[in-house]
Image 1 (cartoon, rainbow, N blue to C red):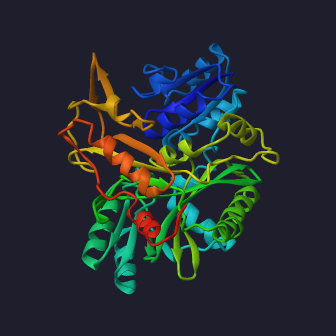
Image 2 (cartoon, rainbow, N blue to C red):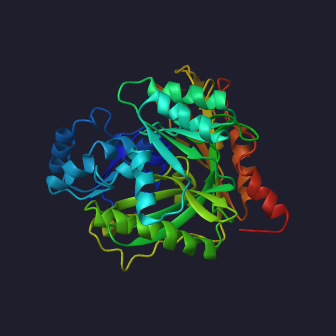
Length: 426
């Protein structure tokens, strides 16, 4: 069949890499795509993803059998709804179901209604009540913009002054809302489940690094690197997450008349009292997709189709349990703030030798030149029999990339490596 992939980031390059391997995939189109996805199919830079009628028309003209929506913005905008209304199979949640990512408040209220373990919270649209709540509860405390914020709408405030500034910053925009949460303590992990509306199949774990700089310092970003599997998520812990978090979420969404189909990505805090939900994303993560896809042993496409068709009963997705994957994000100087675009990047082909994959996230071609065109620009991904081996291979590849205007963290995977050194393998 012909498949259309929506998106232009590192996640989409990883998905294009996996989808193009499927025997079911005759032609792969990516809209708009990037220089990385162009190696696996045809980019559609002129197809406006925000123009849903144009996307539907393209699908009809090219006999598209499956649309895979990568990013959160078109999901929240209802692209899947419009494709389904036109009779086109589309992978991802509807607009109503995508509220699990599109609104922090929506998710917190669902958790409260269905007993899903999460942080205590309150939701606000006005500054003064929010400030009063902060003063009552004190710091540390977490302030989250209610809507989409590309992974950068969270402030973990160590002081009331920092929390108050975050509240004012978020609510300064007309119509804005925010959620204030208790600060949970523990280790974070990412948990992924493929859902068909009523059933869920776990499809892997990862741990990412949100802070911009080494040692988990600096502002939150969309993710500076990740590794998979997250060995701290044991089989017993996975079963607990499925029972206490994923299953009641699917039940709650179905009972509300908005069944969830697609990828449910649970950001977890592994506390002393058990796993608690930090928040949901409703698609493959970025950069988590870059470490999940290389560990995939089966064909991704039939699983996506089964989810779309509402029947995962016969689906099992295989991952290589003896293989670790680690990705290091190379970002443009200034990220997650203002970055300068257009700097030339050299050495990517050399870095991609020896089975290392350089996923493109924010690049473009200018003739024969590859240049930076975003904040997170490359995701250098390597595999190995351990996280330590994958880490060493990824950083060796980065050393071959000539990009003075870029930067990366030097400690991606440090917790997993420490565990391995202490005798806990993958």
